[in-house]
Length: 102
Image 1 (cartoon, helix red, strand yellow):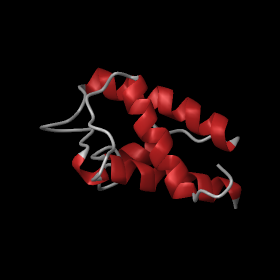
Image 2 (cartoon, rainbow, N blue to C red):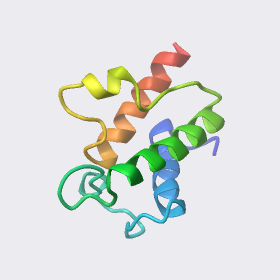
Image 3 (spheres, rainbow, N blue to C red):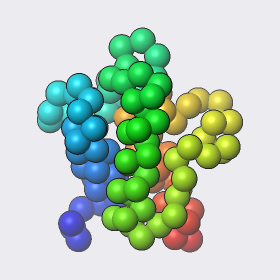
């Protein structure tokens, strides 16, 4: 994965984790914003979201040798939830990784 951008790596990991968790997502994912994680038409219920986030956090931390926390006070207090869709989640994770590496 050395040529891939951070964003593309995150897309790959988040989508693969959705699939591995057995969540209903069509591949290839064309529209990251269309993959809802919360609310109506979400691909999972609240328990499924927590399971997904735990699995994803582990993979992200392994892949990037980081120690980010997806279910932090920061994530919960944001005006626009980073869990509303896959695009928002990837943007949030990318921000956490960049900040940690700085």
